[in-house]
Amino acid sequence: MFERTKATLLATLAVIFVASRFSGHIGPYYYDIILSIGINIILATSLNLVNGYTGQFSLGHAGFMSVGAYAAASFTNLALPVLSALKPLGGFLSVSIYFGLALFLGGLAAGMAGLLVGIPSLRLKGDYLAIVTLGFGEIIKVIIENVDAVGGARGLSVDGHYTNLFWVFAMAALTIYVVLNLVNSTYGRGFLTVRDDEIAAEAMGINTTKYKVLAFSVAAGFAGVAGGLYAHDKQFITADGFGFLKSVDIVTMVILGGMGSTWGVVFAASLLTILPEWLRSLADSPLLPHWLGGLLANRMIPYSLLLILLMLLRPQGLFGGINLKRKKA
Amino acid sequence: MSEKEPLLDLRDVTVQFGGLKAVSGFNFSIRHGELAGLIGPNGAGKTTIFNLITGVYKPTSGAILFERKAVAGKKPYLITKRGIARTFQNIRLFGSMTVFDNVRSAFNMHLRHGISHALWRGKGFRAEEVRIDKEAEELLKIFHLEKLRDAACTSLCYGDQRRLEIVRALATRPKLILLDEPAAGMNPTEKTELMELIRFVQEKFEIAVLLVEHDMRVVMGICQRIAVLDYGVKIAEGSAEEVKHDQAVIRAYLGVEDEV
Picture 1 (cartoon, each protein chain N blue to C red):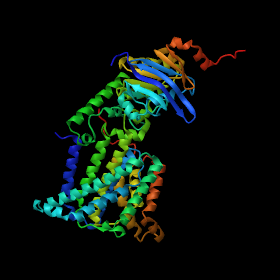
Picture 2: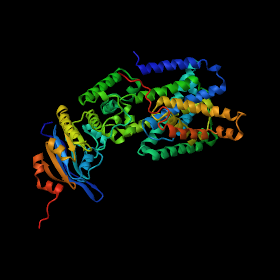
Picture 3: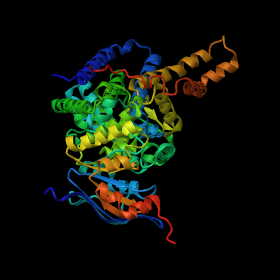
Picture 4: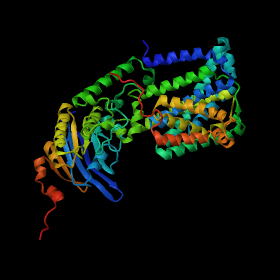
């Protein structure tokens, strides 16, 4: 017999698979937005494990995304013989295995990077940790820009357009599954104890360092998967695209949705992906005065206003503090 | 291990912060199932000794043995795993959690399953979660907190929060529980209840208790053996009666008239 969460995941994957068969009917502009929503859901829910559930503050999520993007893209560019070796399995299956491998390697590379950064930096707390992770993001950017093998500052083009609706949302579903199942278990309650009171957690026999590093590397791993999906969608990546502003975007989604509320963060990730597009079309509208349109087209201004309003009206985030789980009798 | 063997043995423990000797040459031991107390005026070093036992500080010299194994300077979570649980002077519950989840979280260190099981959720994992739920519920029932099971722990009244903290510490299945000023901020009725509770914990769970306390009535009323600390030095040790009449103790607490 299948356990409930596993059954839900499988059912969701089946629905996504069927839905993706009809993706040809969606216009390219909307298709692109839908893919972005999925990728942002992966980024935001995984970051929520660190910033929300474990109570650390990471500002380097885009850095891990870039590690995954470059690792997966490099695999695709270098390991085409693998694809031809898989060819006898049939087109669809061989591409799936190949791309799955690329995403896995991207996630693994980013996860390792997360481990590497996490072990020394998670001794710090709050603002200090934020600064260190911010610095890490910049270091990654500079390193990539100076490695000629991955195109340096010119960027890297990716030889395969494998990302589609199914892959993006299957990975998003997997991320949500992992985060929720971790948090809703005695094992994963360790993350929450670290957030609530580190000293008490240690006194309860919980290795807080282990939990912080674990949260950091799991989140980084999923950011890497998101990076791999992004790279195989856009087919051209530059280190600049994974800068500080991208990290801030992801943090904004987590804060808006409510730290430690997975469904709130999923909602916020979707909203903040659609909002700039909507604002852009609004800005072009002839009904608005020119200066207002200009303000709206720059997403950073509405974003900051949204955050200020949120802090004033609902500091716990849109869905923070609301328990969507039904109570067991 | 024989029953006579001390459970916790502090041998000549000294800790120095810069030029200040917070605790010097402290000797004390606690036997299995014993209810011991540690008292002393403000700043005598009681909490420092507490922090030495639980691994927050590392002694400058001397040894701390728990079941004959050295624990001095080990990480706090490892010391808890050895079987020493504690509560805090200023209550430290997991504020975002319910009463039930606070207790459940303390079972974390006994888990047989790891991250892969939590993700895969197989039979073994589910059986273990059910067992933990049951054990946590039983503990809550013993301490009459079962009705507050799903309440946010911060919504509990002060006495209940203290009780919950003790329940949570017991959930780690300790051999020794350290209580840091549990009577702080309590009124006389609550203090009487607390004394009963501590005695109950000692007898029901057959564990040793070390009580650090300011309140003389509580300590004198329940502790089988008491050590008195002043300026980081142990000035007396014995039963409540012995300690009460010890000249050094009276001098430390009340002072003496100048000898003319």
